[in-house]
Length: 332
Ligand code: PAP
Image: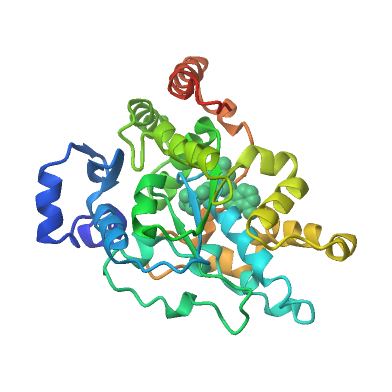
């Protein structure tokens, strides 16, 4: 792949002199896609690290901001769609066809701090994301950074943070498929095996997985009114209950009347993998940079890893995760 075709967040052409100096003092690592360094306990490709630093130093939070956080491939697209739909619901009673989720992808409505907004600049224009005429719409942002780094950017502002967690084995399989499609390479076992090895060693992008998850898990225990910990598997299992939980946490609970009128189910239907992936924008849309929107959607199955990981691979990663999460109260 020619250098200029390589995804911007994996490259190293936006870093400042200062960041270059910082990187020289950090642990570094290389994979097939580029160079990574370990910053505040998490591995970043260099441009993404620059995005994280730009965010940390320059983001000006508003108290009502909502941050949607996740490890990649854990259900971010779904969480973004559900949150947008929760805040849009009162506006589209009489005008359902004008709903932003029908004409735009959740990732373009809710941008990532480090890999979109702050990737190339420390002063992005955030006016587009400011509360619109309706004061019921807070600004929505997303991130894959761990909680401690996000908190530095929030500078003490009491923003609400929602974390979506998913079983590491399904994350791994989802990432394997995504990586191959994104990089336009064949989906082979050897890519799965190298992705698996890098997950087990913890040196993968945003890894180690368990430290990422634990940062939010502990944050949610310490401060449950500001950090909500959700699980993809629970969303699949009991979407109605979980969407209500999300709405309550975000301060926009469903009224009895809304529930009686089927308001919860309407949002679940609008944001289902089937509905979203069926939209024209999902089939042929593209962001200015990054993956085609169709790559956001695949199977969305719980336990798909069973179809791909060998018994030995499952045992090995299960043991690592069990060991790393021991005593935390979190399990999969
Ligand atoms: P990202 O890190 O690139 O943002 P993310 O959305 O977190 O990706 O995860 C993608 C996974 O969510 C895919 O899982 P799979 O590979 O196991 O199929 C994708 O199919 C799934 N997904 C996307 N949208 C939805 C949705 N609306 N409902 C349920 N799952 C979804």
